[in-house]
Image 1 (spheres, rainbow, N blue to C red):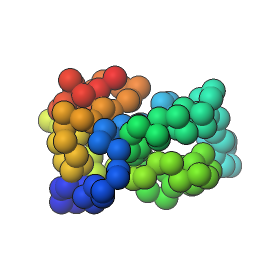
Image 2 (cartoon, rainbow, N blue to C red):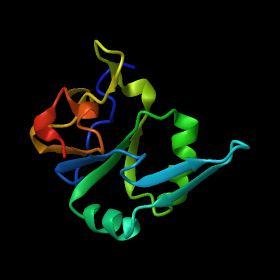
Image 3 (cartoon, one colour):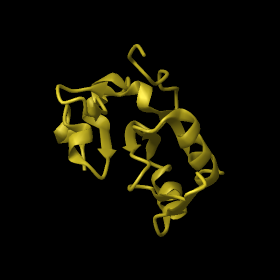
Image 4 (tube, rainbow, N blue to C red):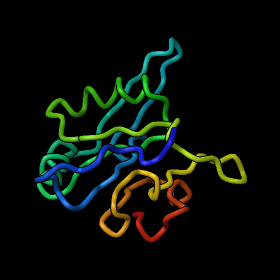
Length: 131
């Protein structure tokens, strides 16, 4: 997919961008033998999203496929606080075939963007922007 991934910001949008990983950062997922997905959210996730959406443009960037990710995100974000969703097809494979989230491709000022992920390797192209 060609960069930039996100549409241009509009007048009045927050000037800072917070990009969140989904699996193991926002939710913990378990798969049953029959293929059913069960997940639990991090404690106080709704408050976290509500509070941060006041000062940040919220996006999710996951290595998951779109259908799977949307089934979870639609449930946890019923207030539509997460403005953008990026999926596996937005990642870049590194030399070891690891899927990397390249923050320079999202279309936001890198100096005003942060990514929160449970694996530092996922944002290894821009480690100074990751937590």
